[in-house]
Every structure is written in C-alpha cells, then in structure tokens.
Image 1 (cartoon, helix red, strand yellow):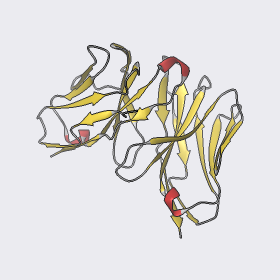
Image 2 (cartoon, rainbow over the protein chains, first blue to last red):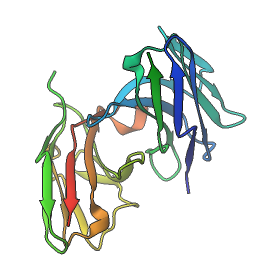
Image 3 (cartoon, chains in turn blue, green):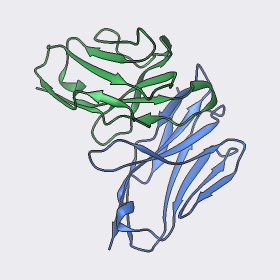
Length: 113
Length: 115
C-alpha cells in the first residue's frame, strides 16, 4: 500500500543553523504534500504545503522542495530558533483508491540555544 | 473562525470497556477525518467522511471500531470493546473538500488510556 518514509527521526541543531527533513513516498499518483508541526501535547498544525505541479515553495524561513521523479520532498528551515523545536510530520495525499493522506512517522527537532 | 472541537480531552478506561469520542468540525467543512496517533508515530487515518458518506475506512478495525456522521456535521467514533493497544490520541480533522487537497485542520485530540 501507500507509504511515506521520513528521515531523520531525531534532529538536533544549534540555534541559527539550518535543518532539513526528508520524506519519500511510494504512490506516484500523490499530488499534494503538506507539512505539519506538532508541539508537545498539542494538535498538528500546517506550516507549509506543496502541490505536484510546483517544484519549490518558500514562506519566510521555511521552504519545501519536491522531486516527483525521485518521489521525495524535503522541508528546509533556515535560521532556526528555539521555538522551532517540535515534531514535524510530512504527508502525501494519494489519488489511488480515494484521496487519502498518509503521514510520515515524524522528526523530533531540537534547537539548542 | 472556531476550530475543530473534540470531547472528551482525556479518557481512562479498562480493557473490554466501551468508549465514544465526539467531534464537531469547522462550520462548512464537508470532509471529516478520524486519525489514531500512537505515541511517537504519525497520525494514521481511521475513517474519512464526505458529508455523511464514508470515503475511506480501509484502516478502521471494524470488529471493534465504528464511526458515524449522521447529519453530515458532528461525528462520533466508538470503540467496543477496547484493547490495551488502543491507547493513543484520537485526532479529528476537517477540510473544506477532500477532492482538491484542501488543508486539514486538526482538533485538540482525545487522549485515551486503556488499562
């Protein structure tokens, strides 16, 4: 079935450095790729998304890139701040058998002050 | 705009008992999702409704889980009987429409502990 793999599971960076989280998906029919941030004990919140007709999207310090040929997409956070510390989930929405969103296992990001 | 509401926020039950969760989506959102999030994992879709019809329930353990959205607004998710492995956070989410990749907005979740 459809699968989304996310790496790394844990990432620790120094404040001000960049952080990169990578995901791969299995269903080539996937066409929508959201990223969610989940702080401890809180609900997941969308931080950025990208559709399959676009290769890159940026919003201030956050950017997402998509490589449809390789079926992978990445989240880039620049100039990290302590408040960026959270769990980040990538997801892929597949068209196969209905529009279902499959989430990755998550990356726990620690930003050290 | 009011967000997705869920209740209860926490529930502790013993195995083999029954439990029900309630979700009220954002007004006007046609699509409603129930996810199970086990500690340390990403959300896993259990069931997806479009108005009051089921779009996908392929990962719903139908021998013990059931869900309904009778009037196309509120939804309830029930577990009967509960097992230890059902301990998780149950997240409800809603979106404007499932066919165009609209953003999913999550509720605060119900944290279930089965003893």
